[in-house]
Image (tube, rainbow, N blue to C red; front, side, top):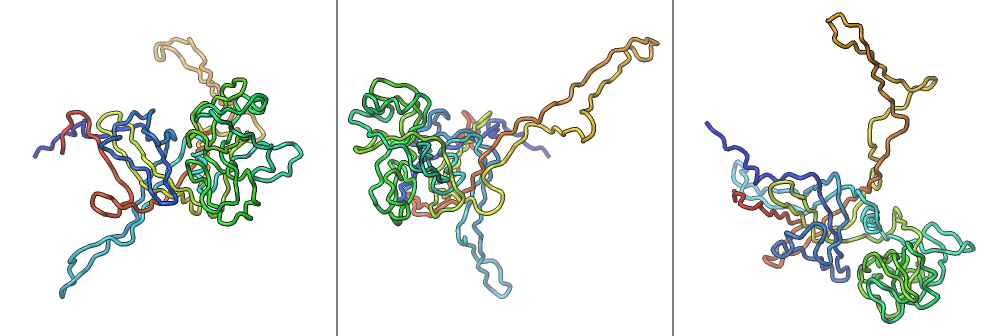
Length: 367
């Protein structure tokens, strides 16, 4: 009996996986569509708009928790048919990189921009009363913000900057381009005119200045600032455990092919769901170093070797093995966990949670 050998072109092999996210329209619950016929073979460093590259990820795990039920009939209660119970699926992984969006997805609730404050401000864990905002003037683009002569000096090279409208006591989702929070009661946010800029995803880094404008390293996610927008310096990012808001995004996870074809997992709607237990941040040590016992010094291994053993030679040399003198560096990873929400496929009306697409290697067998 002979067996066919594995055909290498049909075996997806990878070293790593990459994550891409795009916003869901929270008002209509409309996801960003990933059409494999149009975008499936995109260059990993240049995802199609509006997908955002969030870098390489580790420890990717998918969980399909939908039970399959059976209807039985007859005297022997044989299985007659089966059907799916309440659908549920989850996905978990670790972000290798830290950034505003990575933190927001790992934290799950509103993600705050810590607006720069004066030394006399009243302190608060998510940032106190900030330095007043500067109006963004006509002629601004997604990459260049016109602030006016003089005002530019408040935004030093390298500083982070948040750009959005004032909060005007509206109820509902807030944030230009991407829903960053939901306000159910204006009094809950103290009618703070800066609140939208505290939570907005419309954030950039200043890399150049002109006499009246600042140039950003990357275009703002919401595009050209809306009329009436203002800018403020951001000192840091902060997320919180708790809160009533849930992040919701579309996601594509791409297996980078070393050989064989490309595999993509597309989730139309993922709701951040950290859940209970040890989540959020993990430390990945770079080695297995063990400190010396107390009361002594670190041991070194000096090994005497005799050259030409068995020949009567007495020549010796000493090999010195140097000990590690410091704990190795650790990578701090952001653990993210999500619940998949349902999406109705427009081709046949079926309710689905995830799409797995496979792009075979050139000239690979079909089966």
